[in-house]
Length: 469
Ligand code: HSE
Image 1 (tube, rainbow, N blue to C red):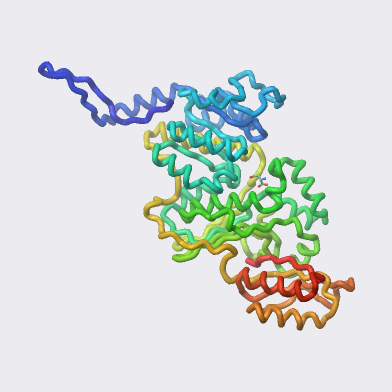
Image 2: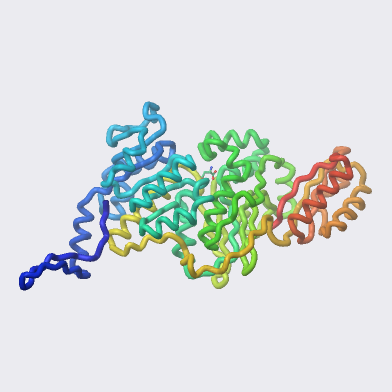
């Protein structure tokens, strides 16, 4: 284990009395640093999927990114997997590999444990055990962190154990580092992001190549950007997990995942993207959260993003995050948010920070952006959010009169129509489709207006709602 105590103890004999004198002795720091730098950092790894394998490959050279940055040799010495007979196409002879977690948990010589299993329950117990034992942990487990971030950070803080999870959001792009280190003094009021690469790529492919949704999904799967269960991507859950992590760090307050309204991209068509473009918008799967003194609101869903908004230009597998702070205004970070190599880099960035904090003896691994004790008082969670504009797609509009009917129902629910995005008259088929934009209203208001509309037309009119940024 790496030790970082700055206290040097001496046994003293003075006039027949023996005592222990403990003094703070800075001159010994350099010596400690030398000892530390001669040591080989030993890593225990849970999980050898695509990210795990890239981590092994990246660290297998003598001149690897960790050694290049810190000067300290590093080695993955133990790996725990679910099935150790599986052929993974990499050389596993340089480390001990097994299926029993004790291989790692019982090893007191490991300097860092990396968790890359993707299994929420298993990861929870492994990480909790290691942090309680004082072994630094790095993980990319989004689903776990979305629910347990603050709890795990609390254990890390109490046991003064570094806990890194940079790769969980944006893979190798330092979104979390930017929040934690770059904006640590700022009061963040709003975060809005494109946080899932595969859905962003799918929407681009649909728009640019007129791929239908399932064709585009196949491409994203083939390129290895989707989760092992791609429903997590397309249903919006992966974005929701990342939003919860970013929001936990930004606001020191958890979004209750079970209350968060989550919509995915599966019902979207080429025509939606086309109409959006013709009206000066792009369609993106957005995660958004906003806090004020009394309310925290959040949602995940496909949104019409104005072409002038920074997130409109986030294309392909890029992710982007706009952070609004009270003093700094809008900051924007963008970069490739998926790919096993990227994620392995995110893990490596955390390991480098752990090693550097120990070399410099600062013990200064940042757990979070602000001191939880000093954070603003707890606010009430409002799913769905504030008054915003919506774009509504209405299919099977038969009669032009229905526009009046529609207006009436919307009006009864306090929703005002700002205008149409497409030319209703020019719509080809008899069951015409209308895209309309509303004036700002609440999620509840728009939903109840649309429910009423469907009820009154015996569900003939089909609806799809997009938020507008
Ligand atoms: N499936 C994820 C995505 C991988 O598409 O963003 C990176 O977290």
